[in-house]
Image (cartoon, rainbow, N blue to C red; front, side, top):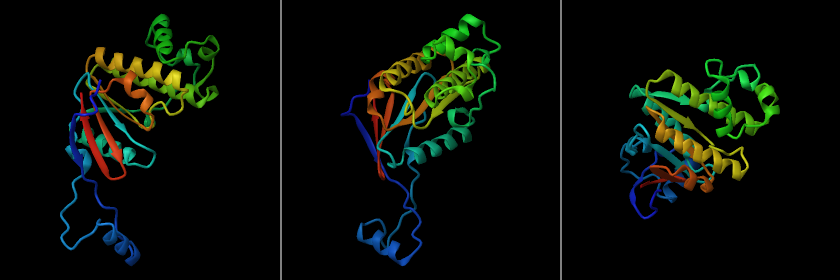
Length: 221
């Protein structure tokens, strides 16, 4: 569990483009623009990328900079040659849920679905398009975890708005399952962004980066 007192650093954020004279005046009023401007540092460049078995959590309110920081982190991971599995880009096959894992024995497929909170018989028979948004998100997560395990090469699972579509009990159950899988599954790491602090304990991240509208604070375990 991350200790909230172990602050590593506050990270600067790049200034948005100043396009008009009004924008320039506001930027100067609030101290965002001076006559002595230094080149901005990309916040993600000051964040240590997660290693195998580690989970990095980006937290903060909606609009605080989590998604931007996540995109920058994904770019760093890919430029470093890390295999990224992004839930937002992961397609789902147009087949019943139980057939989404054709290379898994049936019992193993049901066990994986159960860990993601998809253990209802009716759910197994539906296609992804027939699921609710929350169920479809959990299915995509199950497919991503299976993809990471099947291909064996080191991978980083990334997810924006983690567990935002789930009820909070299910979010806690899924978060705990993700933590266990990242710890136990060879060559897997994760970077997730969320505005819901109730998943911090079950996720038990190795590092938290708090995003606060331009100020990024890194906390370690």
